[in-house]
Image (cartoon, helix red, strand yellow):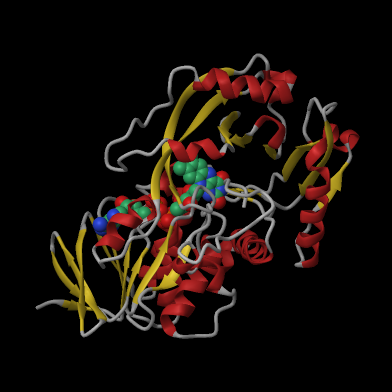
Length: 390
Ligand SMILES: Cc1cc2nc3c(=O)[nH]c(=O)nc-3n(C[C@H](O)[C@H](O)[C@H](O)COP(=O)(O)OP(=O)(O)OC[C@H]3O[C@@H](n4cnc5c(N)ncnc54)[C@H](O)[C@@H]3O)c2cc1C
């Protein structure tokens, strides 16, 4: 006999598990179907930076909700997420100072704890920073990073504790409709029935949407991360830094390591097959991003490169996700395309998606994430257009 559920979530990444957690909390009988293991996709390679620096109000509010959720994860979820509140700094060159100030003003209006730093203050907050070329920076003292595996398994275990079923190693191969409404999914281990299905398949989101006859503009793109061992003199407390002047970011990692990556829209050009892509870094990548990091932090010159890796971004044309029921009233929900900044948004997205599935009043206006915005020529616009920063 076919197993029956109220809702099926496709994908066991942080977005699928946050959605399942919120659905289970509402008493919805939910199943998560994951073709691999939990956090096997984008999530497991995420730098998992939890910052609130966004340039539009809805995403800033969602990021604020996320930070509070990560900070109180134990009380809310009953488990650890490895959140480290090391602080977060955005550095901008002179020409972007005005935009930065406007962003910070917007963020403060929605209740985010953030402020502008002068070059002198930058040097105090970011040890050894070369700040001569910078006019200003924004600082979020309570932001930081979490552990993507702990976060995802914590949400999944809590959902399980509230009755959710997890089918791991089971691939969804089709989405069934009856009379214009979702009826369930086919998997390589048999069919599952449900009147609601949520596509949380990340970089596979377009493929899974095609099973419902939809074309969704989500590309699977490769993002590289270099790993360095910090030199002895550079091992103290360190914030996460987003350095616009060098189009790069660096964030501390357990074991006196530093992760260094790009914040460059050209990452959208490295389109790959999410089931078969180079999972290492390209030759020369470590050197290239390492030079950018050391230009900003000269005391790190003696850092030793370690083995880097690549992960997947699910990139949409405006670098913002699609969160929508398509067709309206069908019970078929899209929740994909987080374009390299979905980890921090996962708590808010899980809440929003569960509210949409159950028909509750949404806590965040989902209309900016509707699929039709692309066809309408009305993509999400932010001050940092078409890049990861949002
Ligand atoms: C290198 C890197 C650094 C990042 N840094 C940050 C950061 O600092 N801060 C931040 O906020 N975000 C960051 N991100 C982005 C963030 O990690 C992602 O946006 C987020 O993890 C997306 O989660 P997801 O659940 O949508 O996708 P995924 O984690 O990819 O999960 C999708 C899941 O669906 C499963 N699936 C696919 N097809 C099927 C099918 N047919 N049947 C069953 N299961 C299926 C896959 O196996 C996968 O596990 C980063 C990402 C990368 C790669």
